[in-house]
Length: 244
Ligand code: SAM
Image (tube, rainbow, N blue to C red; front, side, top):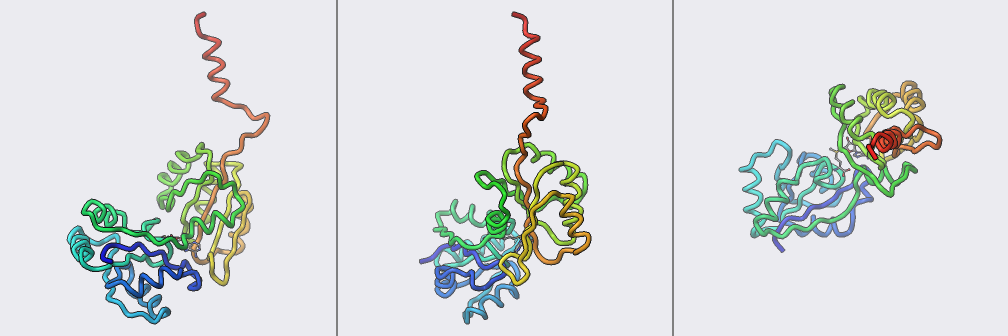
């Protein structure tokens, strides 16, 4: 049937493609993708040939309208270079417009690095907050960490190997005492996951400069017994000062 199919693809190990993803990629009329070379490689692996239409962060509203037009009579799959489309990847405007225009949208679940990292880290996961990439600029990065510091949840970020040490240093300062996990090269040959204090991870990665793709996670704030609860003290002081 015509419409838009959001198709998650592997984040490293090609064995992680789902049967349903293969079926939709085989049946669809065209595939919208970020980097046509990356998607062409996946299609070669699956022995499929399909028209590839570029759709990425630089695509214009006109590009989007052309895709939407096609979806009225054709089935179009949306994939990203790796993992689940829309998760720190292009697509949300396309999905929104398709839904607004009554075009059928179907999403096929599959790998996403954030979830693979979270399941591997051994950090509490009853609540988590995925925050995409940390800003590159120091001030913006610190501001974001401070903004997230008190949220009672594990925080998940995408990170580059080249910026990992800077981010760990910022975390050590802005969120002292928190447990941190670095999950690298997930589903690939050199998959690794390390959990520890930011200081311990800084020491490790200074001696072993990290390579590849990274998910960085920060455990929730710990309510230390005996620690001073500033909010409780303030509330108590206000109660005390209230005229009776
Ligand atoms: N949409 C993708 C997903 O669902 O996983 C994420 C796209 S985002 C542009 C790319 C970032 O995801 C990388 O910079 C890295 O932080 C993370 N990532 C992707 N694949 C990974 C892997 N195999 N191991 C660790 N992190 C990965």
